[in-house]
Amino acid sequence: MSGQDVRGQRWDALVVGGGIAGLTAAWDLVRAGLRPLLIEARGYTGGLVAAGRIGGARMDLGAEGFVVRGQAATSMLAELGLHATGPHGRPRLFLPPLTPGDGDGPSGWALHRFPDDAYLGIPADPLAPDVVAIIGEEAARRAAQDADLPGTVGTGPEDPGDLASFVTARMGAGVLERLVRPIVAGIHSADPADLAADVVMPGLRRATAELGSLSAAVAAVLERRRARKDGAGGRSVDAAVEGGLFRLTDALREAIEAGGGSVRTRTGAQWLRPGGGQDCADGQAPTAWRVGIAPTRRGPTPSDEPVPDGAQEVVATDRVVVACSAGAALRLLRGIPGLPASATELTVPVGAPIARFTLVARAPELSGEPVGSGLLVAPTGVAEPGELAGPAAASSAGTGASGLASDGTVPGGGSASPVACPVRAKALSHLSAKWPWVGAELRALHGPDVHALRLSYGRPGQPRPQVDLQVALDDVTALTGVRIEPEAVIDHMLVRWDGTLPPVTPAYRERTRLLEEQLAPVTGLEVTGAWVAGTGIAAVVEHARAAAGRLMGSDGR
Image 1 (cartoon, rainbow, N blue to C red):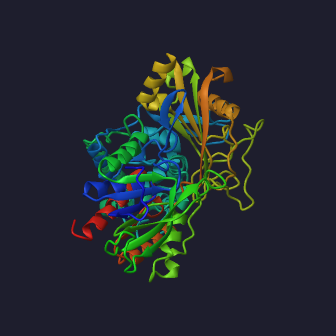
Image 2: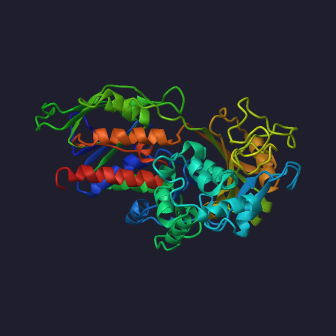
Image 3: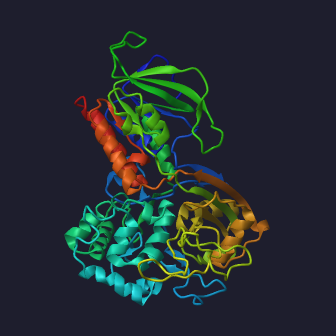
């Protein structure tokens, strides 16, 4: 039905936006017996979940996994006949030395295994040997004081709501700088100081207050994870879809169309208005909403919103799900009578300029998986060529983006090295080891000893990263110890996701919460998507399913 002419037609529901939120909402609407039209302004559905062929193998180009929380995402996978699975192998952290001059190699930076028992870097036992090895004995003793602090410390309504402040209040700067900051920066492309703790780790502050310590709250989270029976349990914080995360969005679109819904790409919503008692073009009864839609073409750059490119059509419906990007959604919402103008006056945080460089190469030395499933690089200053042993430049304000003071110490206690990072990448994933299906497909195509690596670039507040094959290969050598010559590279691809992961600050979260409250009385309209749901696929899926449920319940379905 995706090619159906919608001119003058009436639909049970209109879903604006074909990312994971819109696909999820449309799928739930179809399962309830409704006939929705989903429109997506870009040329594909899935949003940050996208796939492409590199070296002949189909693999994820954007998101490849999700942090497991709740059941909304994993139950959806099961209902679609998909299987959740954790990554293969243990990840590493690439960290500067605790003391200048320590560590291996000319830069002093070294690899450390992720702690066995930690949630986004927060340890269940700060005195565990693998934690002490990363943060040092002094910082570990400070972190262990968490057990002696009242549960109210860092959890009260008057306390700062950002993740960095919460972790520091409970366990100190050492845990923040050497565990939480690199892990959170790698997963969310944001600094913990810019993220609302209750969004990134929902319920953790409350559990800390109830159980008396952050370490006890983390231990409870890990126990629940390991007890899961849906394939998403185990040691790892994240999970994926067996075969690739893109299989989820593919399956959602197929299920929507098989169930009687329709999906149209290169089609965007231009305006949204109440039905106003007007009949549809075919003489049917009035509907709650009329929406102007039009064909689209690419914007000036791939990161820009698509622009209208053709004649408008008018769609009539009783239910609208606005699941597009923040800018497009706010533009549509401004047309709703009775909604205060201040409700849509939101300044959406700008995400980091993300670049992902994936390469497929013949490299027998990688068969030993020298970095496990991959690694995350601590966010500090980056050395320029010829300056691998020199100090990182301090900002004029006295601290850099990493929160380090100009003397290399961590504000509020703890220590870190001013030694600059020897690589430009912020993360490396050994895709063919991390996800066994990628390795199997590459071996089937090219024979043994062929591997896929993905390097990620771009941090908040930094210029748009410039990456080419030689930069990527140099970083691979520095991070894995394996040198890959350009002639050994079978294929490579650079994909940019500029600004697509805006940090959900406490203040911004409060503004979106207020917007949702103001929209709640509006009949037949729901707003969803990462910009209101929070970060991560699990959060977005849960929010989108709740939104679809409210629409279905509005008429007794």
